Length: 239
Image (tube, rainbow, N blue to C red; front, side):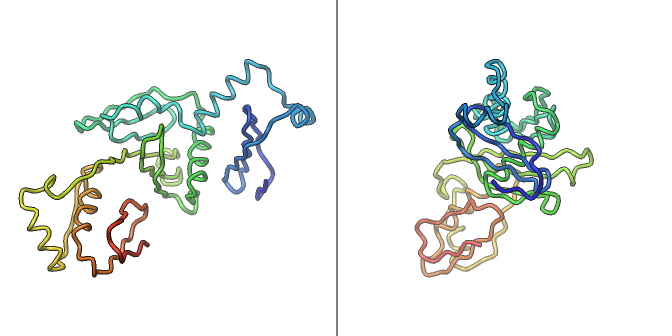
C-alpha cells in the first residue's frame, strides 16, 4: 500500500483492510486473508462483540447499507444526503420528504464514506475538484451519483445526490403522437434543445432521437457522465 503521508487509521473488519491517509484524501482497499499471525503482531484482535459492530460500520461506509430501504422503494426517484442527519427523498409524484433517520455515522465517517465512494468509482473529488458525477449500482440497481464537496457548502458539509436510472426501452411514440416531426428535424440537422427537471426523461429522449440519425453521420457525444451509448450507429466518438 502507498500513501502520500502517514497512515491515520487501520480498520480490519473480517477480511477487508481499509487504510485512510488524511494527506491525499484517498482510501485504499484490499482483500486479505486475515490470520492470527498477521493480527497478533499488530495487537489488533477484536472481541466478538466488536466484530459485529465493526462490520456494521464498514457496511455503512463501503456499501451504504443504511440506504437499502430507500433503494428498494422504486417510487423514490432521487435520494439526497445533505448531511449525516438529513436525507431528502424525491418521489415520483414530485412530493419531497425530509427524513432525519440516518445511519450511526459521525461527521468524519460520513465524509470518509463519500470519499471512499469517489475512489471506488475512479472519480477525482477533493478540495481542488469539488464536483464529481458517475454511474454506480446499489443493490444491483443503477444510479447516477453526484458529489458536492464540503468546500462548496455554506454548512461545510458534503452532499451526495443519487438519481435512479431507468432501464426501460422507449421509442418516439412514447413521447409524441407525431414522431415523424422529430425524424424530419434530425434529417434537416435542426438545432434541438431538450430541457426538463431531474429525472424527467431528457437522456432517454435523446437516446431515442439519436437512434434515428442517419448511419452515415459521424456523431460526437460530450458528457460529464456517460449515459448515452449508441450500439447501432457505426460512427460515434465519446468525449
